[in-house]
Image (tube, rainbow, N blue to C red; front, side):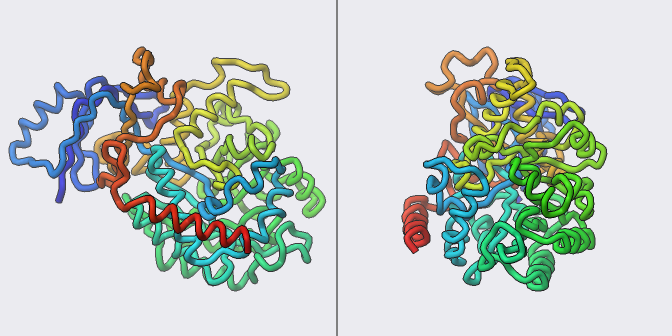
Length: 466
């Protein structure tokens, strides 16, 4: 058993289950193994420690000059795409053109490439404040498996929600991807069962939970959507995930292919409920936002990706106001080219303030704390996690500290919590995941980064050049 003491925190800030915020100045945290044992002020911890005279600490960290918040939750990613950053984004391509350009390159993925790219992306995410990651791996060429990225996540030490994705509707059947990156549906279902029964852990504080994630309406059949939903619901806390309503092109595809708009199509294949969350949801109408709220279906907002691919601005303000479950994601590293969750929270705040056609720009439309809530408790709710997303005694010990006494935050001490997003988002100074210190004094601890980066770039060049 181990005990960890974080003391002299300038501000500890956490969203609450009731929708507010709790903020404690000059705060302290005590961690026992992987559980939050004490949350309070330095004055309070003195008395608490006196009542536990036999308690000893394996590590004591002085967090003077820091703001501590719950670990950020990334609700949507494609980690393998770190291998192909800038290729499609540098010249400017919209989603369908971007995908068609990259599918042939991604067909060269190998098991090592999946493993190494996941390790790179997850490390970058951890350094940005992320402690829980949901990934969407939907193509498996050359013997690649979801196992490859799970191995990487275990070495990084991150809490991981890999979703076993799939593509079965190739160009010959009217889909978008080439046939060679699609798989037969019986093979897909068989491997989904294997992944769940090998890795899925529904217990509290679990570090790996599997989801099922047919890729999109334009890359899988209706039959696979239904079968995946039925399969997932045979197991506890196996969630369902897919892309939906991302672009106007997708609207047109669904109307031509199915005679339905994307959300109507999702409902027709039994994709609704608290076990479902959709990536993007850029183009819902008012009635569809109401449907999302009434069915308790979740939405993962990916602002940077939606901007770089010119997909549009998701109406997050309206979704939040109607109590839709909303979280945040960085999306794939080839449609964002970055893995910075704190930065994504900032983009969310800014984009909702800018507005979109029919909604005037308003600086008061979205606050810092609303954006941070989406990145923490919002993401936890997307994944149906009740043990993360807030800093409360009894919760999992997932939290991060950012320095606010550095150059980038100078003059921001009137509201140090706000400075996390209104000033330039930084890297974490401290990251604790499941009670384990992963980043300390800004240094990533699990392994050396230069050899990983070098091998990643070798694999990237090999994939791109063929």
